[in-house]
Image (cartoon, rainbow, N blue to C red):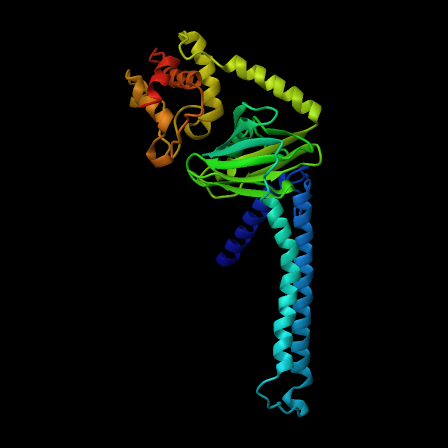
Length: 389
């Protein structure tokens, strides 16, 4: 009876987990995953369309070969079985057979290799791009820098939506949306019909920039640059994820590419440049504690709360900030150096990509949040002075 009870309990747990998983996977996400998806993602670039063609062509050829070879083999076994009085042939070589099983596979391989090579070469042709964007992988977010073309000079960080991370931490997925764990604060925006060159690199470990609808997947390796390209032919939202296991937050590193019309893209660029100009704070500006704390809270919520928790208590190997000796230390350089260079062998990533003011703000916030209440104020000029050390 005990074993039966254990079996029933296991079945109930399994079915409960299945129902819980199915509860939030009830909608297709246009440009992203679909319920009961059996094929590759619907293509929106010519390269992705060619990949679909190659996939089906190779599958059909391999299936025909499989069926043909095994049909002949099983027919021969059945037709020439010993019970029917079949006598084994006694021969040592056949020029015709040798030529046939050499020439026929060679022709098949060539027929498969020619279109595959054509697509592979096209995938690597990043010349004559209308737009060049550097994509940098961080633990665990993406950095986008517009290097050339319309929008040149824009740069920002894209992270998982805070609300969705909190939903994941709570374990309550009853009302999870279709874009669960794929919604970001700042999507990558590109114009439709333009060739976009993507240069990939990484700041810490190996990541991989992959968007199935575009047919692109390119590793981002620290100290190296790789590139790929796409030309989206339809306006819409398209999703991907880091496709290289990069640490404990790997599942929280989504990619959202928003493809817009040329007119909308021009308007977006103008708006973003205005925002960038407004955020270009003078590092020599002297801030008050009252003005710095709200900004620091926003920076902390967007970048730090996922690991250190909103209450600053940390979790597991993540050290708490509430009550931390380094955070409370009057020597601000200790905390600033950790923010700039990271710590714990990469477990705490570098945040040097943030502005001097943002780093000063988050340092100030942590020194005064929760039970810390030090009253200390970190100025942007202190961060600037520590960058070269």
